[in-house]
Image (cartoon, rainbow, N blue to C red):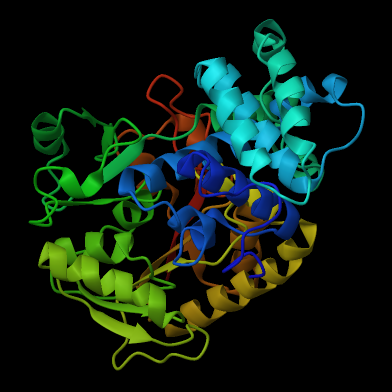
Length: 439
């Protein structure tokens, strides 16, 4: 966390636009240090520094947009640079280029702000002139920008996805990442049409409600009363797949931040919400209090936890590479690499085996990951079926969910969503899930 509590070179200054300065500093920290935007928004991080809430929100939007189109910005800037800029100036140049050419901000205002941010760096007095010269040329490259393809995934991930989905599938996924993500809500009472009508949103076929990105959630009617919670449409499917029943005992393993716990509690199930992170469970507790729902919160390692009574159903949303959420978290490709995959696959298998050990005969379980990698999804379930005689995938349950495309059902009977699904509705996160039953 070396970025916390200090101002990196070349991207700060009280006289500069606070939102742009904070966004440039955050982009630099992601690229140079592998920091996450979520951490950079914590107290002490650059995205927390602007005094006004509107500036903090704008800084985050600019950082997200820059990372989403970083490859395109660098392609425009490359022929304009005679020498490689410092990491901090690189971030500033990319941010300004994206703001001008993708967001359509007035070039004169963007260039002026970037020059003032660069000038605030006393160690490099020539930086302001350099930034001014480069960005004035970049401002006229709109035609080049429009012709550029969407940002490519990093090589370690792109190669794996090419093997899984082919060139056309990967191109569609990258295009979906470039479009970003809308805001999805899960209604507490299950009435998507009613909530959509009240909020002016769209009721999705799977039961979620979609609003335009950038909406202030806490200001929406019904938020304070707990009428809904934020949850991507794909993330809401595992709980719909398991079909929670009133009064039954359920374990939600790796539960935080808690959307699935809320869904099961709203259906009347008695839920143990188990997670290793006490801090993330605090957010779950806040949402339970806001919605008036109840669950038993357990801060424990799911590999060691033993329930007080056998659960009739288990939800396991396992830790994973989160590669299915890149359209929502464009910083992720810059802070993950191939080294993360193998340990996560081993952990998922161990969690699967532990959860199945808790599941009584006749019980049911949903295994889910927000990953695009088959080794974390389809392959995990196939391996679990081989390890556990008497275990079966309920493919009919997945196919019976409303709004599910036929091509979303996988060979072993699981359910696979991808960012390029629902192109006319705005896409959804990449998820894999399967309903397992112990005979």
